[in-house]
Image 1 (spheres, protein in one colour):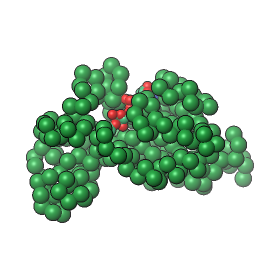
Image 2 (cartoon, protein in one colour; image 1 turned 90 degrees about the vertical axis):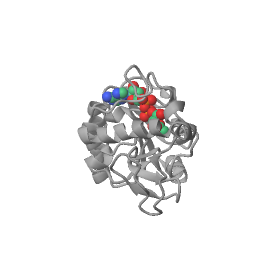
Image 3 (cartoon, protein in one colour; image 1 turned 30 degrees about the vertical axis):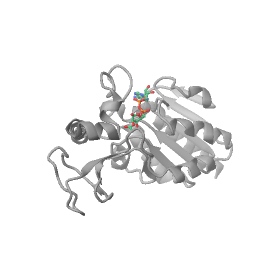
Image 4 (cartoon, helix red, strand yellow; image 1 turned 45 degrees about the vertical axis):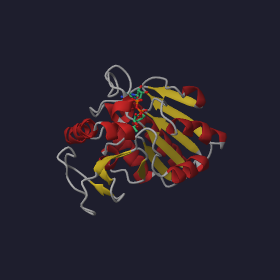
Length: 238
Ligand code: OAD
């Protein structure tokens, strides 16, 4: 690999699959048998608030039953040991990267353990059930919704992400189907700007053709292997 300083890692539901959290697409996926528009859009929230809150309450509760797996732990090690720039951009709304110890992390699709108040616009840590009708701690209104970026809404921190993607020497995508934009477009942007691009996934994704290299296998194996490799290369250069 050429001289690598700046790394952007994009993660998706596949990195949390071996922790026991369902992915979205595929036979046992969260969207299987559900219409995404019924759950994950502002219109769905308007139409059937209870259904949407209940869906995310279940998912928030499921977080207490799972733990980070070796893939999350490997990225946390990369974060701790990589001396150059690193940004882990996750599409995941779970907190497994943080629980593994990663700090240079950004949740572009929001987070289950956060609430967004439609009254005052504040985002706050949130651990309970929203169907119970808790009020916003700041403005007191009964207007909390999951702090999840629904389809049709703008993902968080896009400017910062786009800057990092354009500046990256290496862009690595882990456990994502490449089905949802803008994340699905990061590989082309990074490659066009001169980055090396690597995909680690269980199976070829919709965007596999855009990567310089694709390695297939479970994240719990592929990610630790790659992290060992890049840290060893970095150590050998210094
Ligand atoms: P998907 O469910 O679309 O894709 C998961 C990917 O992970 C697939 O390509 C699987 O092959 C792969 N995979 C499954 N198990 C794996 C494992 N053990 N190791 C490695 N890879 C594995 O999930 P995302 O791409 O994350 O958005 O979905 C993107 C967005 O669509 C989500 O953030 C969500 C969803 O609608 C919102 O909720 C806003």
